[in-house]
Length: 73
Image 1 (cartoon, helix red, strand yellow):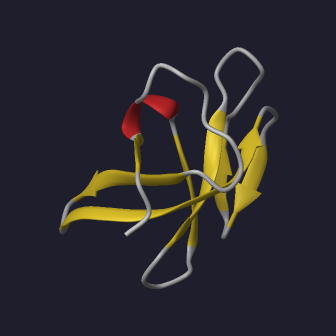
Image 2 (cartoon, rainbow, N blue to C red):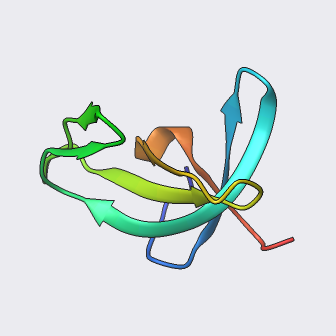
Image 3 (spheres, rainbow, N blue to C red):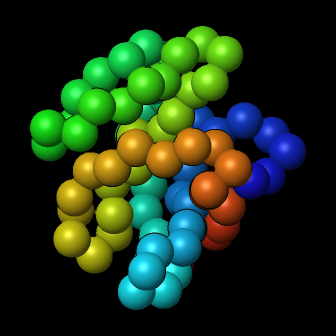
């Protein structure tokens, strides 16, 4: 991940089993939550980011180290 913290609206990419995908940061998660029946164990010490994929518009939570800030395509 980029050294600076990610914020809402930042464009990011990450690796999936199918290859790289990209999307936009929607929110920084700092407390446990559930997304599509998946439990996210985010906390202030270990935040995760809610990201909307560009192609499918699906939401997913990712750890900061999995995301790379990019320029919007």
